[in-house]
Image (cartoon, rainbow, N blue to C red; front, top):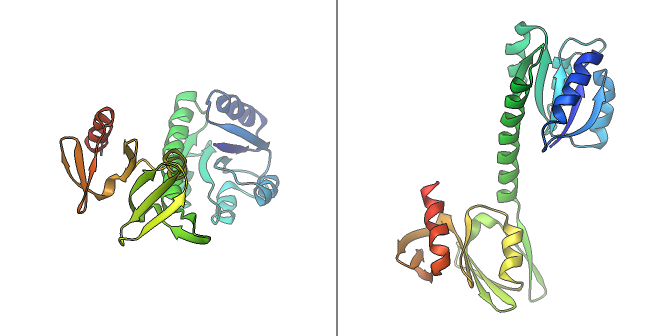
Length: 230
């Protein structure tokens, strides 16, 4: 996750920078001594997480947060004043860290943000439509509409919830990479299934509405574990 630090105190900036270096999925994209400089950064770049002090000259953290309310950036407030905690949450802060900040508290806030980030990213993938070429025509399909996919050597057949069949030049592995959704399971070398549409499992077969599909022996455990973890 791309992050920045905004704090008018040098020691606080250096401390947060050192903490960020200890978290492998964080990338520090900038350290700013005032919020105006950070606003310029956000005009040209998307930042996932902002560590934001509240009491700063020129533009305080709460006002800064309101100005970037239309951006997807998550905020963790960092301040020496506990009375700002409630105000921080009113501007949808992920967390609030009271100075002096200890690494364990910092880590907990970061992992809380990471959980939200992963959830937002997954939802984005689910809602993002796919575009396929079928007989020279571009067809738009939302992943949630796909019931199952059948491989036909260098072609695949995509079956959607409205009983439409789309045939495209693609491999099963290629379409699986495009889907990037945990609900899609490869149950056989020839089949991918959207688990949301599975109505029945019987031995090494499963039903998607009225269609019965085979489950390969080496895939049965994956199918059962998916439903166990739901």
